[in-house]
Length: 142
Image 1 (cartoon, rainbow, N blue to C red):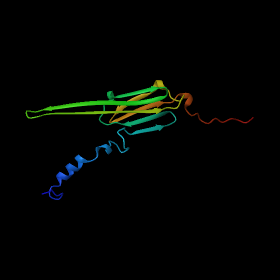
Image 2 (image 1 turned 180 degrees about the vertical axis):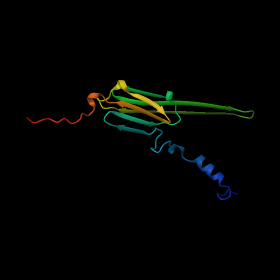
Image 3 (image 1 turned 90 degrees about the vertical axis):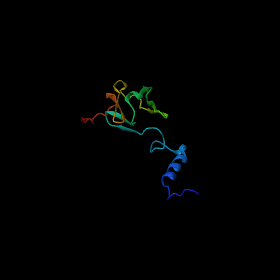
Image 4 (image 1 turned 60 degrees about the horizontal axis):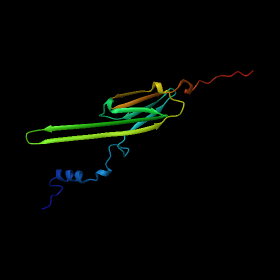
């Protein structure tokens, strides 16, 4: 006799989840495993916010080379649980790499700061004084 969905509602849900197409499952709403990134610009700086919960600040590497900002992360985790009757090992590996081209001659590369707090990596990229907008100057007509 076949099991009916109404008789044992737990089993079909478990089996449906197990046999679903894992190749189309993703870890974010953007259909990728890359973390979401917000980039803002104001008159003084660019700000890059990366959503990366569950990481540690040591997991990140931020580089600037030839006006290309690269943010990467790699995290490996191994867990082992041993009991009298069984041994269970679980591991996970997460990594990503994102690169952004910054405008030439605008960024003060010596003052870039990166902080990680509450699952968010924040990178502040100050602009050079010469690149900041100047207030309008009134020119007198002679």
